Length: 385
Length: 138
Ligand SMILES: [Zn+2]
Image 1: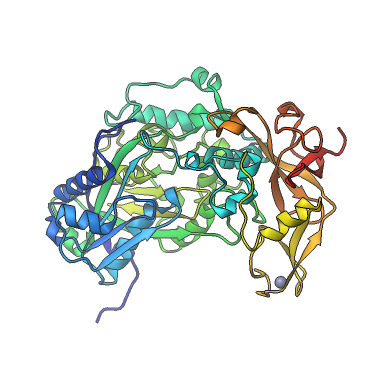
Image 2: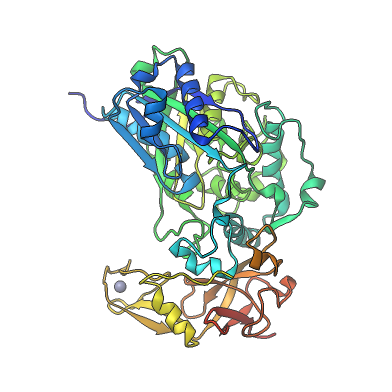
């Protein structure tokens, strides 16, 4: 028997699929999930009956039984759900890669379907303080994810002299890329500095444009062994390295009780991610960094090692995140301007870049970092072609 | 307003708060304070704990000013401040609260421009036993 060598390049993403993205789609989440999964399988040239592994988020409404029954999967031998909202995106692929590399399955599908645009926001679902850990935050009016992250953002700006212009650089890079992407919710809707600086506050110091979209939509991707990938319709995009991250003394969304609240789960994920990779941050051609809120980007740039502590704001200067910059960011428009589907669009955009089919293609892109939500137990992928 | 819905670990904090005392869970074996409360000490894994009285003094570590859309009771007071206080005796224990003009005052009783990182604050309690914070030097 060959020795187990880990997941490095052992699997590849061979199919991606998505529905349209909009503030309101008429179909329900289950129907959208089926459409995205079938589109991804069609892209891969793999029949639904061959799928034997599934992974999604614990917050996914369409469960494995419903999806398998509707789409016509065969016997499933591996299925997994990852917790913590947007922190789960990359882990769906990571779990399937590990399962396939370990021989527990052969064809995996990861997916996310969500009606955040037309459905209720999670924090409005309550007339009482729920869940239990919120007893330390919600009674005081720290109600929404935007409020929770704004607390870290205010300290970040104070501690390192970062500015709202740095946050604007993040929002602008995402919007500029969305303006090139006909599938993006913010296609043909340019953003200016004046619009940003004069927009309404959501939770000071975060304004409207520091917050992700509210979107209906679904996405999926298909993972197989690298050996199998060579026979697929599309050029394989290899899962080079993958990690989850939950650092010591973390508290989801309100990482305030660490020794160092400005180093979050990204740091924990990054240590494992780079340890098992043949490349370093300076070898990354393009990045898809989870952007539910703009401050997550400078925090992640630091966590994943693209710059030092406190340098994430300055890193965004001089068009660094734009096409042709030092690290082109969120080339489909990201959660801020393409669609907010808990970060799954970042995975598929990473695949498009390495296939050479992005609407904001980075010439010759051969490596892409994709990250999941910072501020919650997270995950990340290094993809290569 | 949302009142704290607590659990077995958190209940003592709120019982003491209702008596006007700010107390923090601490390990009776290694002495380390911990927050939020939990069954077991992350430093020495002991299940023995006590509730240690704090002076109620601290400094503002960060703050936010939420604006609507918010839950209705909060929207009615917005914009208001929410602060994060580092306790003087245990700097790594940071508590979420509101900086107000006096005990029982509404969330928006102090203008947000009075709030700054590093300001010294003192705990007070409203009529329902919710900790609030006032400026040490108003
Ligand atoms: Zn102890």
